[in-house]
Length: 159
Image 1 (cartoon, helix red, strand yellow):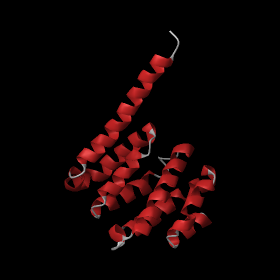
Image 2: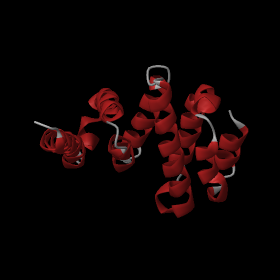
Image 3: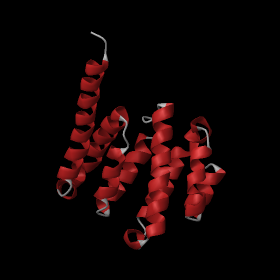
């Protein structure tokens, strides 16, 4: 794993987490599955739901990882680690954490992640059912944004 990811996740070092965004996507792409596995370990800890520092570290790292996956078009390469993390979220009733993956602002990534989340949820449908509204609103929110953007482009284009 990249040294900075190792430090941030291993020591849960919130003060260095923002530095992850200074790294090139290609520089960290090889370690993203390892980082997702480390996040899974953190989110499975008994005090995760009450530990604000750990939650902040995980959120920043997930944002960095999803950005790198999008920019390197490597979602298939890291799909097993992503699904493993989502399954863990479902097992530990952390579905709202999994839903955050859907709200990263990239249509293709959100679509891919919702597909993988659906696969992970097959065995845990009862847990997912509690969060159907949040998932639906997340997906619909992207659709509404796309539609508004298309309408705006039509209005602004010369006739």
